[in-house]
Length: 293
Image (tube, rainbow, N blue to C red; front, side, top):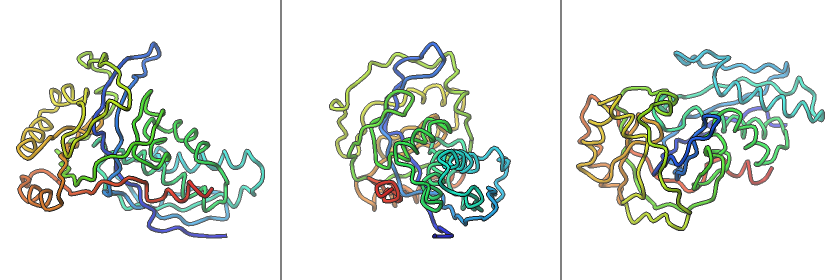
């Protein structure tokens, strides 16, 4: 039995567009979006414990261990495997550490990606035998973006984000700017100024030519009004291409066909903002864990 898994990536995502088409009576919003994996990531490390305990060995300011999606994902998987009754419960423990690079409240899916990587890695380490589909069902209990990372490929998403179709996306380099504000998703989705009636599309209507992206982000007007610093970042980055916000914010991005273009733009980003360069990926780095289970 393998005892450790080190350097397990939890990549960020970008929403290349994000349309809000309807609000259900239960308050959930129906969306259409394209999820794009990028090679900007957190890194997680796992070690099996023989006492059945789940412990996070890395301190994350502002995130108590018991509330962390990493720990919640591990315990959810632990319960699912225990319910099958095939593995002794004392073998289903783990020490988990993380190198946290993705900003919280940035719209890059960091917490969701960390949770998905935890489900994939521990299902492999614990020999849980859960399928991709079973992991996606578990992941949806943790957050609407988690199933995408478990899907393992760029996708056109509908519903609350759980209905996924594989989609090949352009080979782009991205410059991503973190304006320095963390935005709770619920603040944006609860706004009375959020439009919720964008006309639904079908996947064949999506056309992304070069670095010119399809559609828009319906959450962007609300976020930029409440947080003008995001509007400033978009305005600055728009000098170099099609800049927009990802998710519910706060990070903004722009795609480039050539790495050199991204490098040149990155050098010009004002020093009061954090910024990174990232490459588009078509598959999750841990997709083999899903395909061979």
